[in-house]
Length: 174
Image (cartoon, rainbow, N blue to C red; front, top):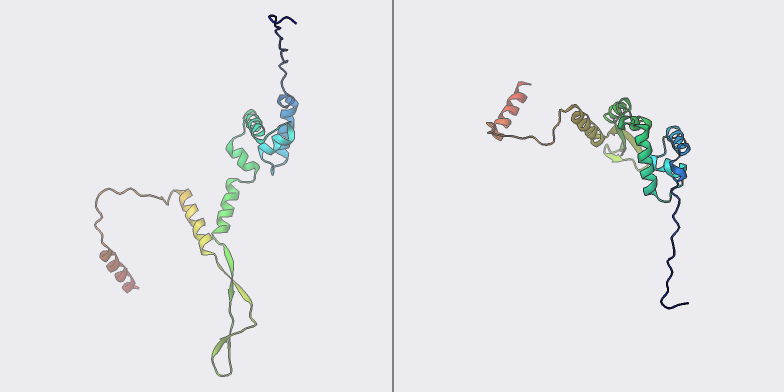
């Protein structure tokens, strides 16, 4: 070989072929699986349908396919059973939430004193006030009746003493 000679190796051009995951058959399979199994997220559907190497690529493909399907946020919510009617039913159920509370049973002894029965292992159902309050707060926020922050400009012509007087007067009327 000549020391001054050099060779230029030509690179072969790769054929630009669309990957199989972008063909119409893949989209139809995505669409079929997406609507048949609401427990799967769109990314999981893309992972099962296409030849994806990472969750990121599956997420991108799922996003593109959802755009092709023209699915709205309301449609997605309904797909997972999160309709407005279901939300209202859940909210009504939560406003009546109950919990179990252990309680001691008192027994009257022969000497007339009450003592805790050592063999009692009773439970009673009581209101779950925290859950009920959170549900009430949420329903009021949804109706727009409860605002987190109130802007106030001006003076308040009411003092704590005035409020206490009004409470005492209203209780006296009862």
